[in-house]
Image: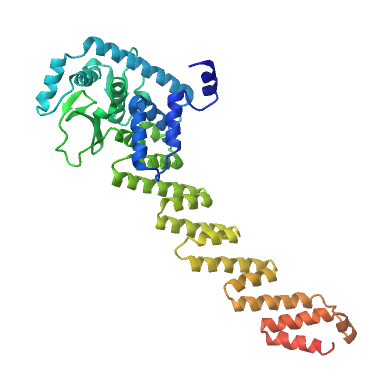
Length: 422
């Protein structure tokens, strides 16, 4: 990396061009992105950058705030050490071609085998085998714990993480399209040339007969990692619902498991909208509710948002929220009723009349005109003579008009008596 590149990445959130490419890919994704085009781009990124994908998404979309830039740089340096250590092992301790082919044929005699690739796969299995002491399986672990200096520390990770590391190391030699993922209930394994590989202990398995077992393209590992939030780190560090929604959106467009990721996406929208409503951020909640396409969620935000804004006397905003609620007419009427009542209490009778008119509340309108009658009457002197009344003719005329509109017979009669002196 030259001076200009180093200067550029010093001032950006990215460690290098690989991380920037991964970040750019995810930044442009929504659940509406073209699936086939997106999956093709992801397959290209997986070829050499699977570890970067996992580390960046843990940091950016899963709430792993300990993965700041300096920490990620160190982990990438550790990844290079792991790769170099594996290269040395591959060169000096890989099984022979004959042994590698024979081992696969023993498990799957009908499978067509590329001998060189089989050697690479079995070298990976041997390198991470528990008896070597390089790797240790730990359920619910983050990728950062796996990326350590193998000369000084044991690599610790769960099934998702070790599968990802297998993919990264394999991609340095061959096309990741040679591999698939075997998805099991609460577990994931690697699949190569018709055989399942249990990466947590470096053995061949046959998981095909297990109920709900599925064989999926290699890029599925990205969706699996995005939605895996069981790490112990999260027990004390809450994942922001905004971040989890993004992860769920990405999983939705990237995954072949449509039913599962659709449920996760719906749950992510619901959680985020719920969180935003708790923060009283109904404007954002409305935006996400609309994006979700969930009519029930939209109704909840509309109703709660309308009530929230009414309580704060923001009646125009309340009506905007009411407009998306199922009980739209009732809520809109309630906003006008509440606005009219507030204006009446504040003695803003003309504004109250306008509000009452929206809901055709004739009784409320008449009360306002009666109140306006008394406002005008208060302008008259206490001692009334014919001359005084004539001097306040405009007030008397207003009183007669308001009395008539109020429908109050006593006020009408009173105004008529005064009018006789004009």
